Amino acid sequence: MTSMDTLNPYQAPTGLDPGPITGKYCETGIFTNGRIGRLRYLGYSLAVMLLFYMAIALVVAAGAFILPDSSEIVIGSAVVALVIPMIIITVKLGIRRLNDMNATGAYMFLMLVPIVNSIFTLVLMLVSGTPSSNKYGSPPPPNPRSMGAVVAIFFLIPVTGIVAAIALPAYQDYVERAKAVQTTP
Image 1 (cartoon, helix red, strand yellow):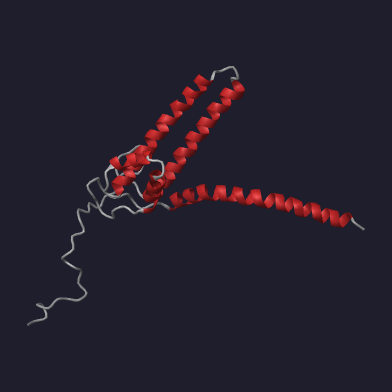
Image 2 (tube, helix red, strand yellow; image 1 turned 90 degrees about the horizontal axis):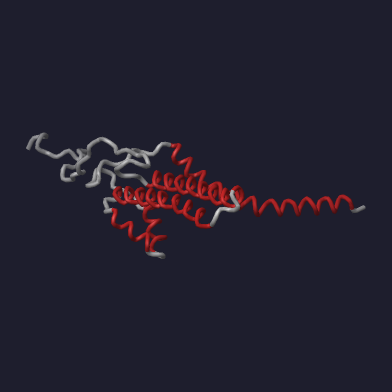
């Protein structure tokens, strides 16, 4: 037996098939087709939600303060006109996220079940997608650092608000007690 006939213990395994890796990535925009990763799904969903909620707040404020004589039907139909595209975009993002996990978009119907939708949303955010190409396309590209920063900001803003809501009254109470002690001879 020669050294050519023996197997190299450091050689790459040959029995594993990594699948059809194309070497290309799919597109990542909100309105494109293809797969979407967890962080982009979360970031795009939060951005869409924030944008549409701000638009709904402006419509309601305009109806209440600028046009006080406008009827509830006009304001309600304007809000519905904003909610429908928000739902469509959210479902589209969910289908793309399911495709990243090599699952069909029909599972988005689970979002209609009241308790299951919370669990299903966690699944969409926590379960990783397939690392290589699957039947729905090429994998999404790696996330830029800015995407992680944007998502972190979305979570830091409410936490900062809660901490401020707790800390400011306590600090004001501390200042009042300190002034009361200083004025007492």
